[in-house]
Length: 194
Ligand code: SAH
Ligand code: MG
Image (cartoon, rainbow, N blue to C red):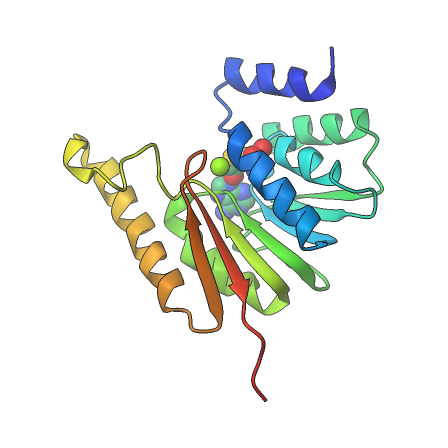
């Protein structure tokens, strides 16, 4: 069976929240159109999105950070199976602590929703083109918070909303919210006026 299909099955069986297919296609097209070459990903999980992004073009390089030990191990196996060890670098660490060298065209944030502002601020100085954030619709709860029963979930949705407002208010980025998959934000860096 094809590796991508195997990973999709594994994710389903083990409840790993990999990116939805529609948003994955959208992101890959964006990478292609804007000739994105270097990508920093926060939240590798099993390296599904990293491998899909690496498939866009063979000059794409990805650094991806995952804090969960088991997922990191599986991600390493998958990157080997895909033979992308030379283009995908996996880091086992908490992205709020890890030190990453160099600059990137694109930052892809797909990790703990409550920390999105922190991730953005920690890595923004390394980014030259765009920041893409996943899961901003959070299964429809962001638009319909009245349906939420649990307090914990309500808190989470509040934090996602706060991040949305934060993106809107960043005058150095132009953000477009795309209702695809579980909701994507594409924040494009504006040209600096000097
Ligand atoms: N991008 C993946 C899915 C990531 S799921 C894909 O689409 O294939 C989110 C992952 O983020 C989880 O595996 C979780 O362990 C990881 N994560 C959450 N907070 C993190 C943090 N602070 N640093 C690193 N990884 C984190
Ligand atoms: Mg996601």
